[in-house]
Image (tube, rainbow over all chains, first blue to last red):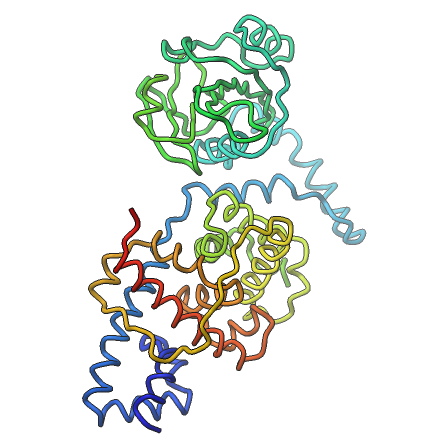
Length: 253
Length: 169
């Protein structure tokens, strides 16, 4: 094996991965590097470069709330599967015994997966994925009437900035047993093909979201592709988002 | 078998690395989230078929890659970049210059590779997959994995060198 052949082999060598060293040709190339100063220098530089590149890949940020979303949606989608009489009997017994406790639990305490990060993540996905607009209108009264008529929050308070924004319509989303009003606006920027809005306000009962803020302070965060603001007012949780920068969002707060 | 593996624990252990792999391939946060979530949905419905629990990680990455290929067939939006087959004599990127790059630029360079090199290169850097594991995930022979890695890494280094020489304006 000469130096160039060794370089070709060591191109795939990861010095932090013991499995790579078990390859006989790699071991031979490494042995050559110990005897060849020029190859040793090349190897040192190669390993340093590979370490940095590896770190760059591992620095890819993972969205906040993704894990909780996966787990909660899995839990929500699980259905009892037919697995024989024993399981069915056990399930029936569990249902019978826990019915009272479950009713109490559902009525008095948010589910463990009804947390604020999951709510925010789910609403952000609602905004970013194609969605049917339940009511197309640029009239505030028409939108509130529609929401009220469908038992969704309608007595929400718009910020001064949102009062100036152009309405485009609304939709009603689900959050557990609660309804979420999704009020859609247009910022005036060119919209992607097929899109009808690029600024979204979600309003839901504050009590339905575990860990919702308890004070009136404003919480700014980037969730999915949205920059978002979350706040509470008069028992309602407000979640506002747009694709852009925080300064742009600030115009609507 | 799936029932004996705790779903929440499995998600906790692997969702991050799966997302990073998905993002390396798609460069889109929403799509990467969907791919990651879909992978666990498939696990929830079909994971019980896996008899060897030690293969869970490979199974998940394989599933995600298949999901990606399936979605990609619907959205054929990746440019084809011809690769110079001569991997030798390519420039070496010095560590300091690589260090000045951020993850986005590295992924941008990855995106410029021919599609067949993107997944093996991402798996090579993420989570230290062995060559055998990469071969299993991609469902190609071991020799193919090594040749694709050799060419893919060489091309990636070349692109990063070019990025350093001609930074984006």
